[in-house]
Structures are given as C-alpha cells and as structure tokens.
Length: 162
Image (tube, rainbow, N blue to C red; front, side):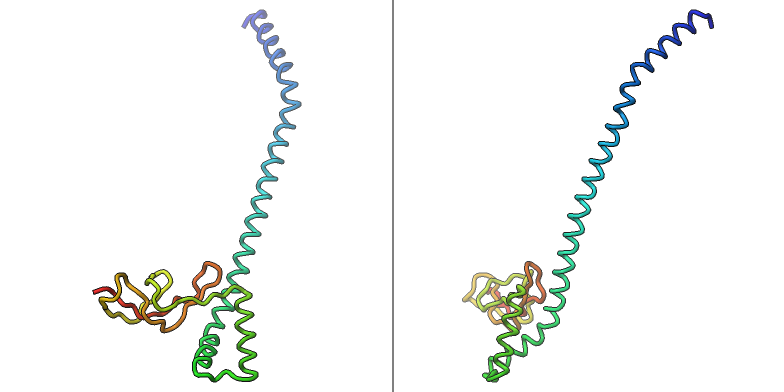
C-alpha cells in the first residue's frame, strides 16, 4: 500500500471514530433505558401473573372446601323435606346456608329447565309429547356452582320429545 492510501484510510477511520464518539456516549444510556423499561414491563407482568395465580388458588381452595360440604348440604335438604329440622338444628342449618351463600355457593336446577349437558347430568330418560325440547323433568339431586365453576352438576331425569 502506498502512503497516500494509508493516509486516506487513516483519515476516514478517524472521521468515523469522531462521528461515532457522540453516538457511543448516548448509546449506552439508550441501551440502559431500554433495558430498564423492559425490566419494568416484565416486573409489571410478573406482578399481574402472581396476583392472578393467587386469586385462582384462593378460588380453588374455597371451591374445594365447598365441594366437601355438599354432602352435608344434601343431608340438611333431605331433613328439611321431612320436617326434621327443628330447634337448634334448624339454626345450625340456617347458619350453614348463610355461610355458603356468602362465599358464593349457588344451588341450581329446577324442574322444567331445558336440559343442558354442560350443567346437568342425565340419570333417567323418558319421552313425552308434552315437551318440545329435552327437559329436566325431575331434579334428583341439585347442582352447585361457585362463581362460574360447576362443583357438581344437577342430576336430573330428562324427558325427550317423542
């Protein structure tokens, strides 16, 4: 290489370094700012995810406890049907019903409802000309749901149209 060529290359390199120098000074700041913004967004997403997971775990725990109480609620309902709830037992049954309602337990299933396999469990089938769609003609065991989650489907006798 000639001296002129090396001088031109040296000058071009020096000019490029001088032009890049101010960019290099702000480039680390921009990079650190971008990293900070990314970390803040990740942390905000993490907090939202943890809060959502905590809420779901809380609802699952309550749902689990309420599921365990369903057999007791069925026994209380059967006792009420036979007029066996009197005195102190009636007070306890009323408190139990109030507590489960306060937690959000909902009893569902009435005779005449349209049969929905999402929320009903068909135990018996019959046909009749009196119905135009499959209908829950008899509630064998009521269903329960907590929030939008079915804890137990209503067990029903279904009447289909002829």
